[in-house]
Length: 247
Image (cartoon, rainbow, N blue to C red):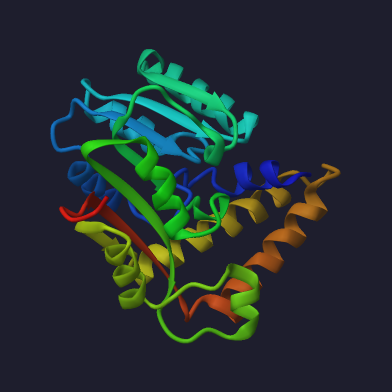
């Protein structure tokens, strides 16, 4: 069982692959898409859930998604066909950091994909290269709610605290026009859903050769969450516009 298979099963009940509830996703999209006529790009779109939700509620929106996973893109295409949205969704199978377009986008989304670019600020640099004048970026990444253990840093990365994270974004030439800090309920729901779905799949497939691996992975990941980072890791989404004095 490879990483993509594990991720697909783990996120079966939580297709927004970040610790956000449906109401939070809807509100962030409302703030990021004020006209309902935008061209939207998702860098690291995975199964395309952000784009699908934007398309489902805004018939004037047109979207493009970029991801390195062919399997995830196939899922996105199938879901778009099932929902009658395929004609407004273009998918690109390539590394998000290597994507090039000849037309800018009104909105660039990248939530939970900063690892592909090497961090939050490099993600914003990539978004900036695709953004039309006056456009918006919807970005999401982790931060430390309190000082982490060295084990947590080694496992998840060297995040900053919330205030420092926002200050770095502002210093990089962006102005937040909205944001959301995931609640404890959202953070916990996400972890329970992921590792519960994976464990449940393993129990439902006792004769499957991958069942033992799936159950072990669910157990390890759940323990890491509870023992290593549950009390320290937070998640922040920001809706950003370029600051007036930025290049």
